[in-house]
Image 1: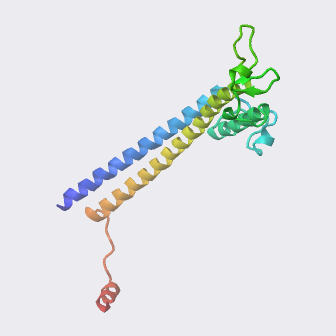
Image 2: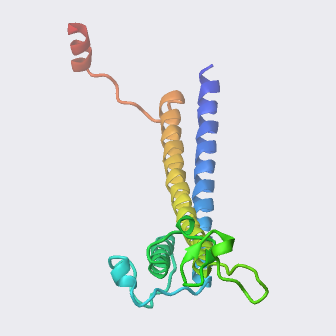
Image 3: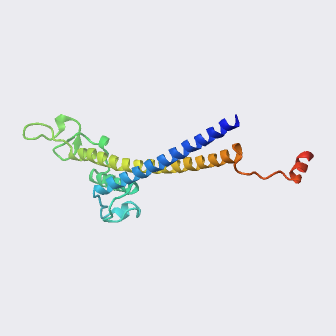
Length: 191
């Protein structure tokens, strides 16, 4: 029975090491893919990047990592809020009034030459900003998932190696354990 447990322990160790190596490889590949895709977009930080990101980004800096992408998404949101005078998508009307305000009432909206209400371009800008910042924030999240995979892979590797050492040392007796000395026997007898 001892051999069954020993071989089971060895098999479990091999599985843990294999899963750990796989998780590290998948995480490293994912991290590389995310960074390559972000870099391929050719995004550079705006002139006010240092001020708006508390120094996380510098003007003209290429956006290459998930953290950079998240910081750039914050810059984009700031610029859209500036353009809309602090209003978010849901706070603005669907249409523009003749005086330049916004409304959701078609009757109060300015009209195109063919009589249709004029859409609120600033509200539409929010749609674009939301799509772009969602992509940037997804890159940040994907990078974090890849890093988590690498960390968990390392943990699995270490667990598998440790389990193998314990199996070989304890169950199979391949590693000589120190013999109990008289002091240990005397101490246990006193208890």
